[in-house]
Amino acid sequence: MKIDKIRTIAVIGAGNMGHQIAINSAIHGFETWCTDVSVEALDKASVFSQKYLAGRVEKGRLTQEQVDSAGSKLHFTPDLKLVCEKADFVIEAVVERLQLKRDLFAQLDKYILPHAILATNSSFIVSSKLVDVTNRPDKVCNMHFFNPALVMKVVEVVKGPHTSEETASITAALCERMGKTPVMVNKEIYGFIVNRFVDVINREAFFLAENGYASYQDIDIALEGGLNHPMGPFRLMDLTGIDLFFDIYNERYAETGNKLDKPSRLISEKVEAKEFGRKTGKGFYTY
Image (cartoon, rainbow, N blue to C red; front, side, top):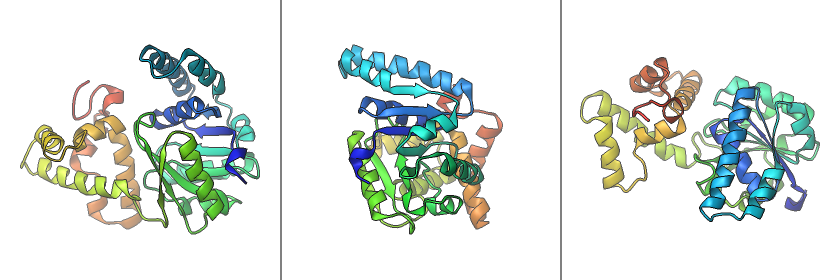
């Protein structure tokens, strides 16, 4: 298959990452279908897309013609089968829970076209943990966007031992056509490239805060001002979603049994209080 055959993209999951990936796809000319089991999530995604696209015109980033074109190509529906039957390329963007992704991949494989590539946007779960429930191992890979997906330029393309060179090259080419910069990870490793560094920083941040060496506010200020990071670790967790990190650490702990991989006390307390960050109005900071 050639990159020119990728004309319709399906995004599975209309949450923070999914709906932004879908909007970005439509802006770059792809017929784009976004689906979710939650009608509420789809409604929120649709409203956000309209406001976002209108804002691009107001800020002079896109013309009205470009926005009208993107809007006509962007569709939100709860009908998973309908979405899959139309797609040449499928991007799964649901929560970071292995069994949920495995169940979904098995379902997607039954619905999508024989030539379609099936990619997971997972930031930590490698595609080799999903591929055995499909009948297209060579067409499965990781395609990891960063939050916010409408802004961040880099996308990690991760080749599993099952991923064909054709699939990897098409996925990288699709990144470029979506206005992104692909980074190829030649073999699977937990956390890929970027999140291996993020994980080290977060662990040190938790250690310092939990043991009273510094407040999380001052840790953020130190990394933002001292290392020129655009966001400190706690601000970044608020943006991405504290519940996402909770799920990631729990999945890792279930796999390794290493107590060091368990969610930190700070994260567990925030999740118990349902303070997930920006999306709930409160996390480590109040919004």
